[in-house]
Structure formats: C-alpha cells, structure tokens
Length: 228
Image (cartoon, rainbow, N blue to C red; front, top):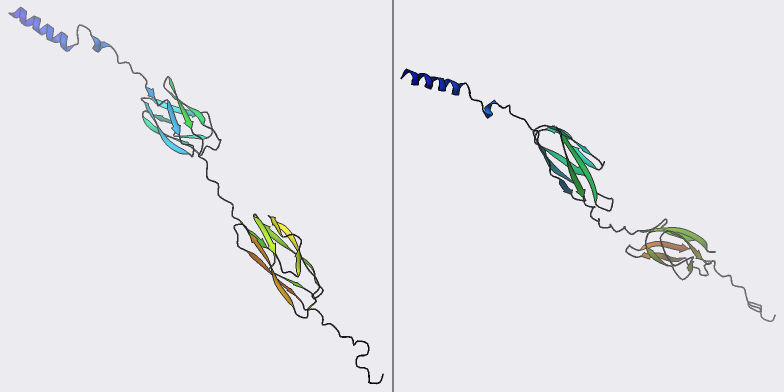
C-alpha cells in the first residue's frame, strides 16, 4: 500500500516539473510577415486611393516615378497608405512600381493610371470692335482710316458718297474711307456699318461739311441797258 502511494507521488512530481520532455520545451520561432495588393489602378483625371500594408514588422516604401506620391512612406505593422496621382496628360496609360520592404521581405505593387479624359474645347469668344466712333471730312473730302480688331469674318458698308479700301475680311485690319468733295450746299451724313459672324454690328458716324454755293455769272447780254 505504501509502495503504491510512493509511485503515485513520483508521477505527480514528474508531471508538475514537465518531466519526460515534449514540445513545450521547444522555443517559439517568430516569423516576419508582409503583404500588399499586387496591383492598383487609378483614374486618368487624378485620384487618391488607400493601399493597405499588412505586416508584423517595420516597413518602408519607395517609388520609381515622380508623378506618384506616397503618404506615409514608412510604418509599422498594419497600416493604410495613401497613393495619389495627378491628372495624366501624357496621352497614354502610365505605370509605376511601388517597392515595399519589411524585415527580410520585399513586395512590389504595380500602379497603373489611365490617360486623362479629353476635355471639351471651349469655343473662342468672337469679337468685333473699331478704334473710333466718328469721322469728319471737310468740304473737299479726303481719306481717313480706322482699325478693326476681330477674330471673325466681317463685312463693311458705307454711304454712296464714300468708298472703302475693302468691304470684307477676317481678323484685324486697317480700313481707309475716302470721301469726294461735297457738291451740295448741305452737310452730308452717313454711317460705316460693320457686321460680323456671331457678333453685334458696329457703326462709325460720318459727316462732311457742306460745299460752296455756286456763284452765278451773268450770261452775255444779261442786264444790259436797253439799246446796247
């Protein structure tokens, strides 16, 4: 009886002391872990996305292009990293490679950005203007000029007592207006009118002094005393 009790006591002591050896005697082995998505796609007009770094160690990121920004570029354990690209005006798809290094491991992420969408062309605002609003001519007439500033097609009309160096054109131009002598005893008035595609008409007022009154020369025999 005493012998059995002694054997039982020895068994309890061996179990409490881990006797007999086993897996509990082996030291635990710590392994580094690092994981990132292998690919990322960004919009061509510019975009920011989060890249999740899943790790149990410190890590750092490097990038091989200057059009991509990474924030932050280093960290510890699991963390979101913001990847940002501006508008891709290169006209084609572009790619970059992010290199993530942590512990004894290296992972790579291929970032692809589409080309930017084509922006609609903004139509140019059409303009038509002149550098004067009025011209005055003496009774003998003469030539004066005005300047057109425009980016559209235009045409010009004037009174019948004037002539123009040209009556139509496009863009900027210098136009000469010529008036002959005024044969009447009244001032002459009129307008130079410019019209253009997609713009309001522009007018220049014209005025010419009255001409001289004709002197009356008596005809032969007029006002002669009777009997001459």
